[in-house]
Length: 152
Figure 1 (tube, helix red, strand yellow):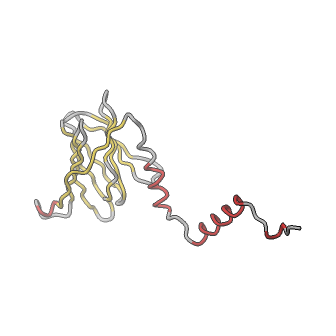
Figure 2 (figure 1 turned 90 degrees about the vertical axis):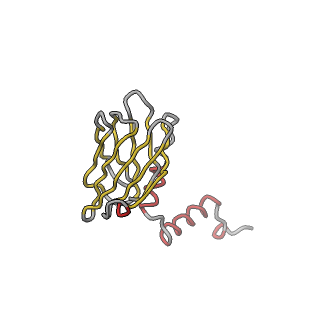
Figure 3 (figure 1 turned 135 degrees about the vertical axis):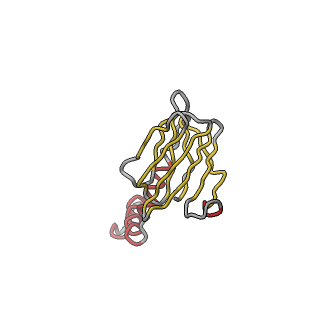
């Protein structure tokens, strides 16, 4: 004779364990948002631009700005990150110079901000939040290029 009070299915045990772990050691929302955002770069029609150079503008001009260079096979994205109080201004240029749609993506952000690079490939974003960020560049008639995630 078995006692059903002490018999529990594997699914029930996993459900109870999951609830306990969520209560005691939950995943931070920023980590969850970053994980979800990482799945958005799964398209075969995109190219990844890797960070190849990062330096402080203090070395060059004596200010707090950072200079970043992202390189992909088809394009190089050069950006300057300028802190303004608790926000950031991003000023960039595409090399070779070309018009394109450029967007800033951040995990957990409900919206992405976008702008159009001019004929010389110049673009700018004001009022960007510090934190994990990537740029998405879509030149007309070319494949989309995503920069790797970088903490600004």
